[in-house]
Length: 107
Length: 121
Image (cartoon, rainbow over all chains, first blue to last red; front, side, top):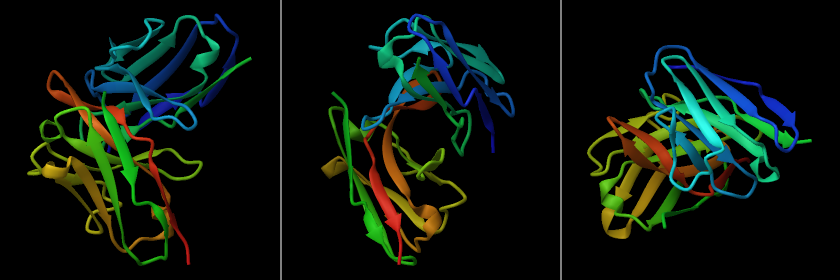
């Protein structure tokens, strides 16, 4: 199974800050990586697919990069509505596997 | 718009069975692969199973293989997860998710809000 290591597990940042979350795969997954957001009481929301493609309707402040084993999700200017938990997930091969999540809080 | 609504969760005794449903709308159900993913309380996400758009291919996590069965009813636009021989380790919120496609890969593009399964005597 491909292990996905996500860091940090939590972060606290101020409105307007640039925030970066990293995800590392235990083996190369090309660009078969997606990022999504979880908020309490709401369905998971897909943000990025194929490592760097912005899902339709997602604000351009979100961006993704990387290929192979190392990936990042960046929020260019953190806003209060961005609080939540962010997950990476590989879809290179089954079983699909997820990072442990990053809880983002607003200071 | 895409809607996925899970149901069927509840409290079940160890060793018993439960069937989850996921009602899909807003897209051509028969054209997309569908997944089940679960999240135990306070834990991370665990992929459970996938079924191809036509039901011809199914894959399972090792942790549920032989106990869980994924299926779909195209006429009802509904995805199912039959869960047998449940144990405490199966207690989780279960989510259904719709595949989206880009290039040669399919990712989890849309999710339901989940249904809670508790296993307790």
